[in-house]
Amino acid sequence: MPRLLTLAGAQTGPIQRADSRARTLDRLIALLESAARQGARLVVFPELALTTFFPRWFIPDAAELDLWFEREMPNPNCQRLFDRARELGVGFYLGYAELTPEGRRFNTAITVGPDGAILGKYRKVHLPGSVEPRPGSRFQQLEKRYFAYGDLGFPAFRGPAEWGAPVMGMLICNDRRWPEAWRCYGLQGVELMVMGYNSAAYDPNGGETESPALRTFHSTLAVQANAYMNATWAVSVAKAGVEDGSGLIGGSVIVSPDGVVVAEARTLEDEVILAECDLDACRQGKEKMFNFAAHRRPEHYRRIVEQVGAVPPG
Image (tube, rainbow, N blue to C red; front, side):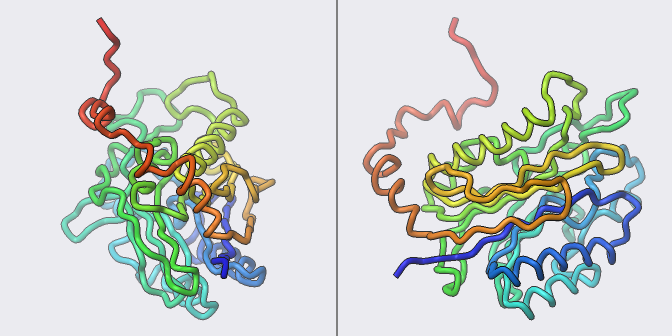
């Protein structure tokens, strides 16, 4: 019997700095309900889905910065989303800013099962941007200032039996561009990768060589290539549009284990994309072209884990 799972990507339009948490939750719940009506069993929300992308701002006051972070999950500020999902019997992936009891800050995502239980937790590893703000820039990219590097690695986990018990993995935004992250999950037999992102429409570091169309192309390319090379379904979901005056790309996609885009967002607004996914379609790649046990040669890959920057030959 095929293992069929209907997946949804819940792209959001911009969440402005002035938007209330209640209004934002209303939007997320509306997307969740729309996906559920269409048969979705798992809904993927974007990175930092509860707030604006606050790393674009220089926030020197720690007390003000803490207002953007969640100290536990769930909590009273987002309990309604968890409650509604459980009522509908739908699970979800949610990105948010995490403040630990020890005072550490992470860019984090969780996957929640249809019973409301947290199945897996991931902390973003590949942080872009800088620690110090760039003088004279209207917008910053200060993830390295506001977040610690993820310390959980790339832990795969099992989805529930009613989803076909898929082997699942999570990434966040810039992680999707790094094949090492995908391969760590591929080596655990991943069948379903879920990820959210908030990617700038123009280079937040001040460059002018990439258009929004090119940045969207690169976003999709990274997911297609890595889904194919690890023989996994992938759901990659954006926060999009003009947020606090700064553009974010859209381009949310659901990609098959063959690297084919099977669903794609058409707007920069709140939008649900949907696909029925046969999890057993992963077997073709895992048993043939990307049969790791038969074809990988890790004795030749030491440079990947022993070296950080590029070192040209002498």
